[in-house]
Image 1 (cartoon, rainbow, N blue to C red):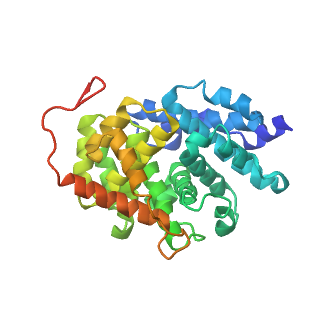
Image 2: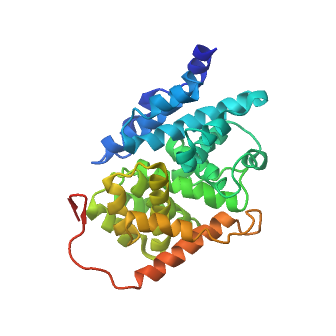
Length: 326
């Protein structure tokens, strides 16, 4: 059975190649391909290994900076298997309750990749997940569409017809993350791509770019500064994405040097302060089924707090981050 599942659902590592996908192949191409390959490795490992301790061992043999992507891939695999065998729809939940718990954000995103592959009802599917973080499932859906269907989702700017209301915003946040890969982490290309979209969609796209730039990396200090300048009126969204990435990294215990650098240059905060800000802004959030989802209120609060911080004096001089001079 396992061999059959892998032959039908397996993904070749070649699919993570920027050349294969038709993405821009600049200086960051190698690093971004490594990220994609980690995702595919985690996905294929979960198809092959149903035993959670054994799967955990395989995923955590990867470099710490790549483990989150591997867990994201594993989450996609388990979510797909749950949809194919609804009488045994417990794989994703057990992963989330077990070794995947530190990677909760990535697991919700991975579940969105499964949503993108099958024509299931959005509301019924989202009901399976955490009321706050379920919007990350749609973020994952958006990333999938940008990564695998860039001509439709980015060039033609099509939104899936089955999405309504806030689901479209969450989708665009993931689509923005995919732009980081499609544009090869190059600020000029990213800016041009985002400005081609309707103004109403640009803020969510910038948020996704901030998250990807901080979590996945691929840009040096000069490029990050250029990105911050290019965001302009959407600098708050860019910063909010960076803060989300900081929280995801620290919750999983796998931060890498570029996370700190990106947080400082995109949000004006250190990694730990950026992550802590997301916790502060969670306080007192209301029911996620309100007209404005709690998830969006959370994001707005983060933007507001970052803007307040931007008005306070900051140290001057070169920024040193674990030996990296900015």
